[in-house]
Structures are given as structure tokens and as C-alpha cells.
Length: 376
Image 1 (cartoon, one colour):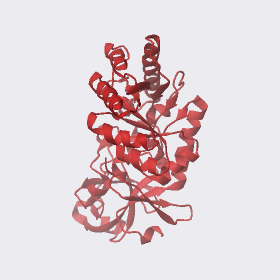
Image 2 (tube, one colour; image 1 turned 30 degrees about the vertical axis):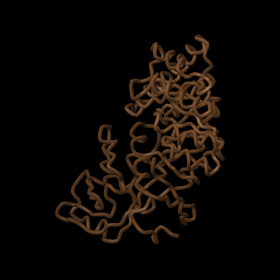
Image 3 (cartoon, one colour; image 1 turned 180 degrees about the horizontal axis):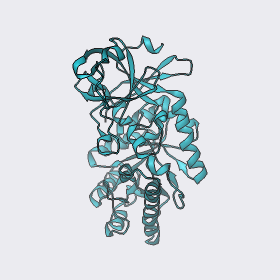
């Protein structure tokens, strides 16, 4: 199909831009000498992940067991479930392992580690478990120097569980926007996770995997010495939050929302489009950054940004486009009813989650529908 034949709103994916992003990140990891395990929660799309693996990725990272199930069924075997494990999720994890999935799981507490070990022993399976390390006070995990690190390692008892390694995610990198600060955060992420691994080894525990990563630190790291694998997700599409952080240009953003102008409020300088927050998502991640893009940056139908125009407000199925520099009293002439526009998202993961498929655009302007999935 051609773009003008699509029903709006629709999630558009520029294949050439996406491939450039894939090649750039994979190239950096190759230069830094580490295995790259992309986080597939951004796309939840088999075709996208096949492109990442074709470029050199080894294994995948998931954020839900639904993702693990879907990607394993599609032929992806080496999977890291990078969310803390709880007892209620051990049964489906066991099911994947018994089907042949090379599944690694995560813990950051003695209670969780003990539950994993007990369940594995009861069911005759040995879970491969990574300990989550807190390297930036951002979210979950154990401090590298904490007594709890060794306590959790002791709780991962054979034959029900074995310590596979350590993992961290420098989510605090999303709060930065200077190159030097991002490089420093990448080094903090690396050094603290490596320190945790060294401490475990000194205590006599195996620690084969040292897994770190985020898109900003991946594009800013000077060294990954001591790291065995890197993870990143949103780089594959990029978004306005990443643009504000400074790790991508606006024309590196591969994902956009195709929308149609359905009306106007001329005295207010508004154009009304059929993409509300059910299409853009409610994510306002740029609101706390140096440039607030509202619910998204407006582009023409070919994806060229129209600098002053943003989706400044959104209801469930209605978006309001306005000029943030001056009121456009001729908005009905600027964007007549029926005009197709594209909107760049604040957060690609959240926006992608609003759709059941991507319309992948080829260089010749043809689109191909690529299914994606939701659920836990």
C-alpha cells in the first residue's frame, strides 16, 4: 500500500532509518568488543528483531514473559527476562525452559532467590539467574558493596538455581543531556557492575555474564572493559526524549504516527487531527527536558519536521496541533481538512504499544504491514 491509502492513525516505520540505527549501535558494540543483546520491548515485532540479529545481535532481552513466549516461538532461543522474578511467574518460565528455551531470569532479593531455588529443585530444573545491580539509584537492584549481594548469591542454591552473572541498567542516563555527563554515566554503569561481578568471584561464586546497558550509555561509552554483553532498546527507533538527551538527530527517529486533519478551531489556531493520546500515548517524557514537544513533533506526510508545530493537547481520539511560536490564524489554510501529517513520538516504546502493527515504509514509498503484539 501507499501511505495515502492507509487508515489513520497508523504507526509508520521508516525501514532505512531503522536499519541505520541498528547498524550504528551494532557497530559501536563491535568496536567496544562486547556481545550485543538488544531489548526487544521497544518493537515487540518479529521483523524488527530479525533485522537486529541479522546485523550481528546475539540473544535478546525481554521485559515480559509474553515477549519471551512470542520470540521463542518465532525461533529466538537465547533470552534474558530482565524484570525481577516473582513466584507466580516461575511456572510459565519453567514451561519455556522445558520446551528448550535458553532463558535467563533476574533477582535482587533473598526472598526471590530462595523461591527460584526451591521451585527449580521441586520441578527438576536449574534456573539460570542474574543478580540485578543498582549502579545509579534509579530503580531496582542491589548496591555492589551491599552485604545483600553475597546473601542473594548464597540463596541461589543448586540444583534449583545457579548464578549466571550480574546485570544493570543505567536508567538515570535519561536525565542527562551533555556528552561528558553521559560518558561519565556509562563508566559508572560499567565500573560498578564489574565491581559487583569481581566481588562475587572473590567470594567463590561463578559470574560468567556481566550485562549492562541503555541507549544513552551505549552511544556514549568510552570503554566496556570487564563487560560481556550490552543491552539497549529504544535506539532501534529513537524518539524525542533521546533527541533531547542528545544521542540522536530528529531525522534518526524511525517511528512516527500518520494522522489526518479532521477539523479546526481557527480563532485558537488549532488543527484537529484523528490521533489523540490513544495513538500518541500519554507519555510526556519531554516535559521535564530542555524542549517540551507536547504530545509529539508535527511533520509533513513525508516525515519532514514542521518546526513550530506540535501536538499541544490530546484527548482520547483527538489531537490538537498548534504553532508554539505564534498563533496561526490561517491554520485551516496551513493544514486543510484531509491533510495527512506525521507525528514524531516522545517515547517510542509507549507509542508503539498503542498499535497492533507497524506500516514499514520502503525507499519506493510502498508500505508493508509488520505485526506487533502486546500483553504480559
